[in-house]
Amino acid sequence: MAPHTEQLTRPAVRLRGLTRSFDGRTVLDGIDLDLPVGQFTALLGHSGSGKSTLLRAVAGLDHRVSGSGRLSAPERVSVVFQDSRLLPWRRVLDNVLLGLDGKDAERRGRAALEEVGLKGRERAWPSELSGGEAQRAALARSLVREPELLLADEPFGALDALTRIKMHNLLRELWERHRPSVLLVTHDVDEAVVLADRVLVLERGRIGLDLVVDREAGARGEYRARLLAALGVTEDIR
Amino acid sequence: MTTTTATNAPPLAEPEPEPGPGPKQGRPDPDHRVRRRRSLSPGKRIPAARLVGPALLVVLWAVASAAGALDPGAIPAPWTVVESGVQLWTDGTLPADILTSLQRAGTGFVLGLVAGIALALASGLSRTGEALIDGTVNLNRAIPTLGLIPLFILWLGIGETFKIAIIAIVVYIPIYLNTHAALSGIDSRFVELAEVQGLGRFRFIRQIVIPGALPGFFVGLRLGVTGSWLGLVVLEQINATSGLGYMMFQAQNYGQTDVILVGLVVYGIFGLISDSTVRVVERRVLSWRRTLSS
Image (cartoon, rainbow over all chains, first blue to last red; front, side, top):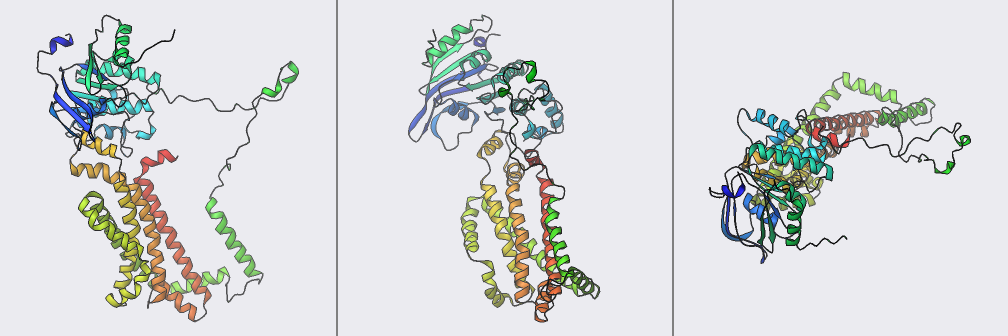
């Protein structure tokens, strides 16, 4: 199904006139946005453009931030942060199970770890994991809750280039299998084009560009150029 | 294959090649071979390193005593001390004194421990608690606890109660301070994580706050254990009619240096045992940290 036909059904996330400001400085300036169910959306922007503020608003993590507007999001939301945020005093499996109840929780936790390629590391301490492994564990922790919406705040920003490519493949694979709606915040244009079906550019508190990526066409260079132009970056290496 | 960053890095310096037939076979530039750097680390550990110094001291002491170089009135020979110790033990005075002292230190320590933890939790987990408790404890800390002895004697009499109260105060302060600091130093990112994972308040405290504060608590615990012995020694030597300190005080009146030394040895043994017990418990409980230091 192409992403734009799904828009006919009720969206997973709906923002209407969402405004957020810090100390009188407007960061989000009346954003209207629908994220269709099951769509993989990337949100691009310069640092300080408010993309994390938007994500935190959708996640319900912006206590003590002034703002207005209407916002609806699904019941089951998972967040992946830039750091893996594993509790150092819990073993990997117990980290994945954090906040999870029920008899088959452990079985689901093990399955999630297997899915991200960490089978056999259930009893390891977080300090024994490499950066990529820790981020896989964080992915498992968010997956095991079977989220309707997965929010990811520059989840691969701290990884080295090779690990990042592997993680891109893993994330896309997991998304294809579980089909949650995804909102991925990133400042990496290539990452956005490689992963997402739709790329938004946040600019001065508003959505500056809304681009649907046709993944079949393979014209990534063109998308890349348009996104970079929207971000005000010119590439003159000749 | 999941590990991508944990590949084995090559050693920083290759061992120097054997200076065999190398240069003769036309190796053009011998100056460019890698020279092994001089190691700046102190080298391999000596087994049981901690015991070497004390053992050497005892040997010196024994040799000097045997040679008659020490005045037996000031420093009796090691075997005299052992003899006195055995004698005091068999006639029942030493076990009775040890028991009294242990009861004092133990009761005071437990009370201080409970009070320190309770106050730290109350002040670390609620703003009202913090407003009521934190300033008060810091005021208490500013007054040297041993300076409270005269007042406490007037309030509580010269019996056991005042001694236990003083020890409890000496113990609770470091436990409170370190636990409270650790509680308020919990990483805000973990608080955010708890919100995302939908933890309730009780689970948040049990699964994040308490384990996160444990390292700080153990620092306080070790200071508290040391403090309980310190308080005990002072209290028993100033005003007591029983206990190890009293035994030593009496020995001072009769010029029995060997008995004083027996008392000091017993204090030392208790200090060592209690400190290493805390260490063992700490290593068990904080086993997740060992992976960092080892």
